[in-house]
Image 1: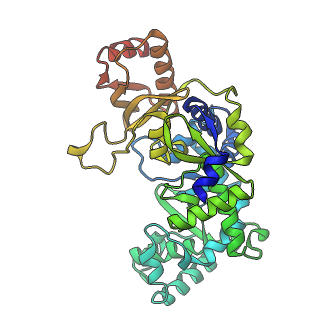
Image 2 (image 1 turned 45 degrees about the vertical axis):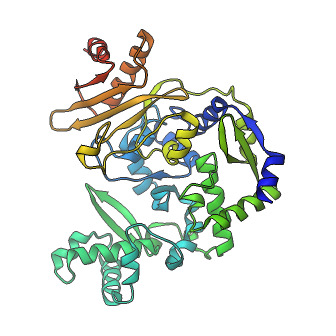
Image 3 (image 1 turned 180 degrees about the horizontal axis):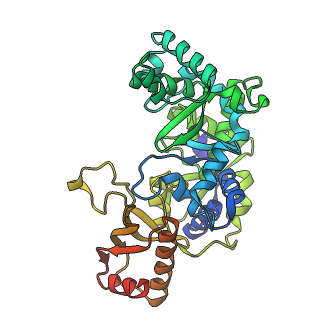
Length: 406
């Protein structure tokens, strides 16, 4: 029945039209300033957090590619001063606009219904940790924002256990992250940090599901039933198919066929006109795309549509890496043209490019100029005054780049 419904109502699009749609929705280099960073966050729905900082961490790289003059302090102020964003589970651990907080209260208040990466063991121990939970909450209520370090200093609760309890209370919405100092997170009571209207009546399961499904579909642009993160809900394949069927019948979702791709993708009805209008302007600058950038969330879709296979190699053992530890795709317009593996030497303010590898063996003067501009912007963002390029493909690209950069 589902396949019959799809085949009779699917619209057909070229790969280029769909790539254009996806890149346009990302809003690359369309914003300015701190307000622009907030607008970008709202447009993206959420930004995935990752602590690895070979260069700036993922969440800062994501905004660097959307906001022309972005600075890490912009996001820090949005999170911890202006309080217009918060951190919670979405596409893994993410930064989310604050207006969504009331909807997420359902998940926070019903943790057993949802999988929290890395925290399942902690949740299972919540009853055993009753005394420790009570103690941590009372200390924060009495003294204000605390990190695991303060609890360790008092020696009434071991540091790792304090971290567990703080993470559990954050997962359940009793605490929020008040601020960060280096890699240390300070937690405070939710009701003390967020406006009172953020803690109103908790949404129902149905309301939360409708909200998170719509948020997921807006964030991804194209819906892929094979995606293991599908709808950010614990749904099995038959449940996903039933959901898709209901949304098609309700005229909320449209199946689409894409040239040379057998698999059916879906797009929200509200985005269909944007997909059909493939001449909307996009930024044509070269961009180094963060490993966990929103555009890359569905790697299978990237392979299907962009004919580009990407794997982040940071968790691979060195001998199994092909392109490098922190390899990032290079986007030029609507095409991925290569990969770059950078590392920031903070002490010497030097950007080390272990490799910059293009898909094509040939390159023109215009491409060199665009790569130089992208590298200069990347260096400026990281406050690096020097650059070292170790390897390029093709080999002669290194000389061309260094000539212009020097």
